Length: 462
Image (tube, rainbow, N blue to C red):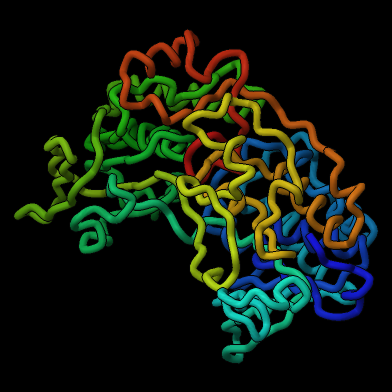
């Protein structure tokens, strides 16, 4: 990184994309370092994406969900009542009691602003397209924004992309694209975790044949909710679609999981899945969704299996990042994960040893485009094993590096919890390997384990 912070001082701000937990943490670190910043949030307020899963309880406690720099900033403002560190908030509580108060304090700081309804449509170098080499390292970024008053162009000394992955759920189709008929039958297909404790939401699924696609904690939470619904409405049927040949290690580490609430979810999901209320359909990779004569759906797999008479489909197969607005900057991404290439070897669920994701910072996140960083969930691409604390450490390091404090940027200031969960996907076509892993006889579910994710959304290690 060749940026000279002394030469760039008092010039263009750091543009932070996204007013979620990691973007706001980046802004809090900017405040502590007296760096000018602008946070651009496409949603109507702070934590807009978190609001999409407000009813979901996080696996991490409050102690792990508040960024250290943000806590210092909030404490100094003397307008914030810190929550009980031992409690496990819902997404809605996290947003209301932390993200929104933090955004309000940040918006009132000197040299900083937080803007809503500001969707970033492009990032490039000012006056230079992707092919131009000359001047790239010294020139500012041009950030194109569709705002409440129309389009505009902002100059930035650096760009920190914390836009996450929430807006791009993975499709039902097995090819990575929507299955045939998936888009046409969108009114019967939902993505993410429905609020089954809400009467209006539950009524959509009660007494229906519901298909759940996905294996991770999000799918487990849906299975638990639907099983409870089935105990009150016996006509409710649940089919669980799995691409692998057996359930295997889908329920995680149980009592061995140091994220207690995630371990409990796995145990509850196992009880639901083995209660007789849920039908397992394995080796099922969806090819098509077709409408029957009675208006219900038939879902067909690539090996010609069929699940018929389906009323509703809940897809919880994870998320993927959006790189569309970064087409004019130079990126070095892992071809499979879409994660920062240097980081990918530590986080790939196919072949990393679970639990070996090391705390990391600006060095692993540096891109060929100088002073551009992908952080938070987006830095992991399609990998599911993200934790809020990891993101907080990322932005602490990145903002220190942008401030020229490479000694602080290079320090490791994070200890992650261990967990008994393995999410290795590489062997899911092998029934024997999958069964052995679930029994603790090999695979990556041995003494080490996978790093947990931010919350019960998006699938994978959470």
